[in-house]
Amino acid sequence: MHADVGDRIVVENSVLDAAPRRGTVVAVLGKDDGLEHYQVRWQDGHESLFFPGPDAHLDDG
Image (cartoon, rainbow, N blue to C red; front, side, top):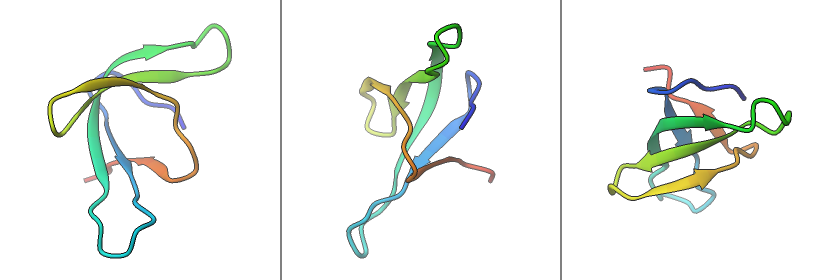
C-alpha cells in the first residue's frame, strides 16, 4: 500500500458489525528504508504510527 499526506486510510474490523477504523495520513515515513509507514490522525483525534497490514486500504470515496 502507498499513501500520500492527506489520503484517508480505512482499517477493516474483523469483529462482526463493528465499524472500520478511519484516519488521515499526516506524514509518510520510511520511504528510503523500503518500509513505508505513516503518521495517522484517527477519527477520534489521536495520532499514531501506522504500519499497514492486509486489512488496511485507502478510502476511494
